[in-house]
Structure formats: structure tokens, C-alpha cells
Amino acid sequence: MDNTGDFYSLNMGSIPVRRANKCECDEIGNHSRLKICRFRACRFESGHSHHTTHMDIMNERIREILIITQEEAGEVIQEIAKCFRFGIDGTHKSGIPHRLMLEQEVGDLMLMCDLLVEAGVLTQSGITEAKQRKRDKLHQWSNIFSD
Image 1 (tube, rainbow, N blue to C red):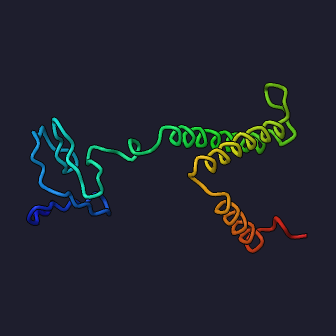
Image 2 (image 1 turned 60 degrees about the vertical axis):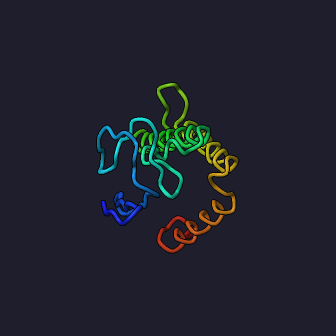
Image 3 (image 1 turned 30 degrees about the vertical axis):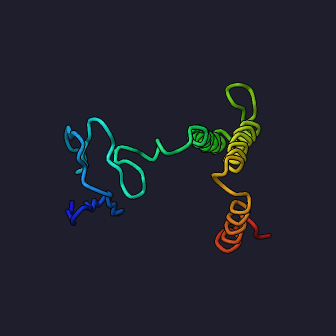
């Protein structure tokens, strides 16, 4: 920590952070070179406290959408693995073909992606551009589109 006048400069990983002024609250200890204050949080120039995490700043609805999207992506991966292991037309232990199980899981994931767009986390135009870039790369580097 570099004390330069009324400002303290902190290096949090590769991100330098400047605290607006010296912490004068009742300090109870240090954690990762940052003071842990008893009564009020010290504020950085950004307005955020060094006690605030990114999860605190994130909207709870967006957080839940991201968590469920992560879970759905994992379920797609798991179902693809089962298609490789048992065959895409093989039958799931529930009696449903793996192709239909995969379809269900991909549909669930696509819904979560739509919810990310609705919540303003992603944009439809950004997704469309990313899909086109991926298609272009697949044309160049894979045999998916070859006749």
C-alpha cells in the first residue's frame, strides 16, 4: 500500500484502486492488505467499499439468471456426454431417447439466454454477431460444412 498524501493506492491483483481518503474508522484488522472497519465501510473513489464484492453490486435477479444459466449449460454438457456414451438414439434410464433429452436441455439453456437478453445482460445483436463469427470459424477450421 502506497500512502501518497490523502490518498492510499492499493493494488488488488492487476487492478490498482485508489481510496478517496485515509480510513479513520475503528479498524478491527486487515484482510488481503485492506482494513476491516467495525462501524462503516471505507469508500473508494468509485463509491464502492473495499468490503463490497461484485456479488453485492449485482442485481439479485441477474445473479439468479446467471446461476441457472450456468446449471443449464452443465446439463447440456452432461447430456452430450451421454449421447457419446450411449448413442444419440439410445434410451435414457427414464425411457426417453437421448436426442429428446438433449433437445430439452438445449431448449432450457436457450430460454436462459433469452432471459439474459431480457435482463439487459446480453444483447441480441451481440449474440447474433458472435454466432456469425463462430460460423465463419467453423467454415474455416472444421469439416462441419464440407460436402
